[in-house]
Amino acid sequence: MKFTQVGSACDFSFLDFSFDEHLNAARTSSKMAAPEFCSFFLEKKKRFCKMMVSRGRRFCGEHATMEEGSSSRRIVCPLDPKHTVSEDKLDKHLKKCNSREKEKPVYYVANINAGSADGDECQQQVSLSERSRTELHSLLDKLRTAVTDLQCNVEDNVMCHPVLQGELNNPKNGDSAHKHLKQQSSILGHLEELGLLGGGRCFVEFGAGRGKLSHWIHEALKTCEDLQLLLVERCSTRFKVDGKHQDVGVQFERLQVDIQHLDLSKVPLLRKKNLPLVGVGKHLCGAATDLALRCLLDTPGLREETEPPPKRLKTSEPAAGPDTGSVFNDTGLVSDPGPVSGAVLGLAVALCCHHRCEWRHYVGQQFFLQRGLGASEFSAFCRISSWATCGLRPTNQDATKLGGDEEEHEAAEETDAVNGFLSAAEREQVGRLCKLLIDSGRVHFLTTKGFNSKLSRYADAHVTLENVLLTAVPSLRPLS
Image 1 (cartoon, rainbow, N blue to C red):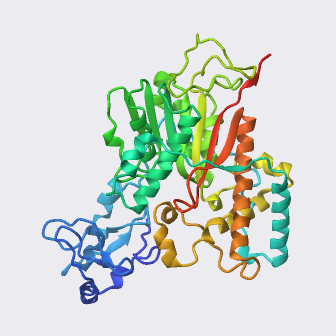
Image 2: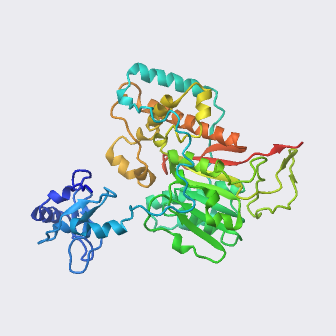
Image 3: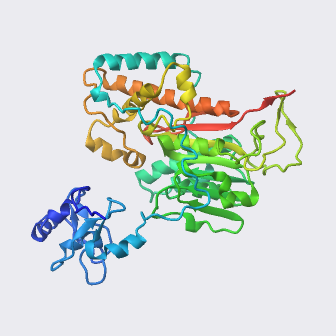
């Protein structure tokens, strides 16, 4: 096995920083590190490392080479180059590293939601900076033609839910926390308006992170029966809220798996009660949205039937049983008697990072092909979509003020590729058109699956630049 020395794969420049130089840099700081925390001063962040140290030590394991008299050499972990390990402790570390190969769970099915790989391997990625002005003009012409007849408008619909009102009024919450709370409140408001926020169902949160969205869904439905919350996250996450939700009658479970490989029909929790599903997500990055849509609607065996779709339930109404009669409405339409095993009642997903979408995973391929567009145009439009947000970050100083989601979901800016080609306002408008076109393909996919879907601006731009919510509920079929 070949090991890479620190500094060749990642930026661990502190290893070339002498102990005396480190102390001199630390003295320039107005504060000294607390005794229980690492004394290494992070020059880039202008603060001390926040990792805790062992008794009698001044530095954490990551910065242990700064300790006087230390002879241990740090190397990059061969399983994950994002962290380092002492060379003499490597064998022990490999047995417990979080990035080690683990036994696959029963619900892991490789690439089940990935989509077709036909023609994807040969698709060459071309950056905007490598394209000529003529090519860029051609792409913009194709974009304008494609969006001309779109029947998919984005509505302004900022909502709120009373369960978060106390936290929104809490002065202890900073700006970043306040922005997250506003988004979560609006998503819950949309779920309630669509009749999706109720008991007798399982909420599947894709890209759950710490699980805060599921946390507030649970807070809003504490008194409901037969409530399940399934959190899906591929990474190991710190500061999770899962431990706060072990109430009797509520099943709160987390799956550490990539959505690309998740077969919901094989998840033990869902097989216990076969409750209908509601998909949710807050800032589901790029291709993860497409993977989640396939996971919900294209998983073999998830539903016994695909037509007709299940009826929409009111917020206070539990899931209907198999003996429930048909329900008629004022429009002369009839909805299905009730959800079959694992039926999907609807979804609400906040979209972001369109520049991270991939043609293979994209659920709107047919939508693009119908407009004479293919993988090449899709790749270019994904790159151009970043103009919608990066144009609003004129300086690094302004970017740091955004905080929250903008730090986690940074746009992929092209380096001066279009300077003088379009103004900043025009670039932003073109970027938003690209996002709209990509999202319209997702709406088209949901329509073909028997759902009414729409796009809404669920938050103000000053709260988050990625403020579009994709919602869907089953369509009602004409009365025969």
